[in-house]
Every structure is written in C-alpha cells, then in structure tokens.
Length: 352
Image (cartoon, rainbow, N blue to C red; front, side):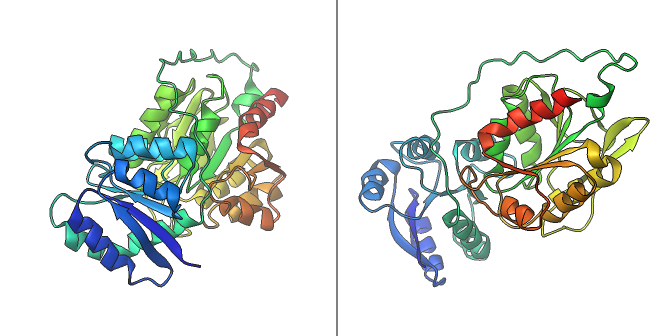
C-alpha cells in the first residue's frame, strides 16, 4: 500500500528536497505540495492524502491554525516539520495537543543536509502517522485557571488504603492527547498517578507544566525521590527510566539512566514491572494508545500479581498497538473507551 503524503511548506528548497527524499521509499509517494495552508486547503479536500507533512511558520495562515482546522473538520494524520519545534518548545507541544501524530524539528541553517541525514526519522514518522486514526477535536482545551486542591492532612487510618493504591499509566503515539483527556476529568484529590509517555528529553518538563495548568491535580516532571501521593501526577522525564519503590508505607519515584527497553527510555515496561514488584494487587495499571508493544509484558506481570489492569479500546485509540499487545498477552482485565478511563480511576479509588 502506497502512503500519499501532501507537503505544506513555504520553502521551495524544502519541498524539492522532500520530494527527492521520499522518492527513495517505495511505500511513500509525495502526492502534492503547497507553499501555504490557503492553497493546500482546497487541494487536500479534492484529493485527500493519507498524511500531511506540515510546517508552522507560513504566510497567510500558520501551520498550527491550519492543523486545528483540519482536526476539527476532517482529521488527517499529520507530521509537523518545523524550525519552531526544537526540543521542548511550546510550539511542539501545541502541535501534539492539536492532534499532530509526530513532530520533527528542522534547523534554520544547513536545512538540506539535515533533511537528508534525518530521512530515516522522517520516513518512520510518516509511516507511523499513516497507521494512526486521529479523532476530530472540537477546539482547544480551556485556558481558565484551575483551582488546585489543598493537600489532605495525614490522619492515622484515614484514607490509608486509597493513599497506598497508586495508579500507573503508559502511552506513546497519541498519548499526549489521551493523557490530557483523562487527567482533566479527575478531581484534585485523586490517587497519585505515575505516567510514562514516550517523549524525548526536554519535552516532558514543558508537557508536565502544560498539564499542570489544565488539571486539578498537581502535575510535574518526576525527580528521583519524589513521593507519589494523592493529588500528584509524576511524568517520567524524557531520556530517563522511572520506577516505583515503597518505603514506610509510601511510594516514591526512582528516576535513573539506563539502556533503552523496547527501544524506549523512558519505558512503560520498566514502570509497570516495578509497580508489580512493590505494589502488586494494590495498583491500577492503564495502557493507552501507542505504537509497538512497550508495557505489554509489564502489564502481564501486574495482572499476575492481582493488580487491576485496563487497556484503551481500539475505537478510541489513535494507534491500537500497545493496548492490542497487552490484550493479546492476557494481561488486561477490562477494555474501555478513553472517555470511561477517568471514571474507572475514580471507581478504583472509591473502593478503597
């Protein structure tokens, strides 16, 4: 099957270079290009491509505005390739939040050479996007200030069970949006949540900051030794693995370097396996949208220890890879649409 890619970039050099690069892969065809979204809009309506490859800075209309319009009307899998999407940039996170499947940064200088050297990364991103199923988005998340819940006083015996029942979540492609959808539905005093989302270094700190502004819970990038407590969400830092350990009846994050696991660092399997070892049946594990099989073996280990395990269903996934593998391994108790995951977390907490 040939993947038809439509390129929107105001640089003629970029368009020509991309056409040359993409011709080298038999699975990809450059179906057309335009220097700006105003010209691209009618073209992609007439001949809908499989994937959009989109710049951000362009005359007439910027790429983020165009991306949001596409995702609200007729979602097309989109890869962003822009000088604005350097590691950890606000533009990159806005693109992912708007529905982009992947972001590839390009430099302002040495552009042609960079694109040639990054051909493999770009082709992989396009093929991943082609296998995704983006969902229509009704608009940007509310930017209204969030009232954070005050920390609960620790009283002997009170909330002891629910305080010691952590939640672990793993996701990859499409996960930035899925996690936001889940967390923004939860009250500020929900059980502590540890999350591995496949992201590069420098992205996770800004991603956590963005979520903290949208959620009632307190969201931050995890640091070694952070306590996982009610009202707190810890995001594993890009380029580091995160594990859970238990000491004195409390759970703490262990953040450390190490080799990639399942080609990822952080890895969902690393988090899930540590949760199986230190929390066992007291943990709720959730695996969301993502490419590949990271987390499937860890979820199986959790299931065998008596933990409650949930996988996102195929219909609501951007990419039904990680949940599918976890289900196939027999490690999943329930398969739920994304909109029911927050309710499952609250029900888990209420059972104490």
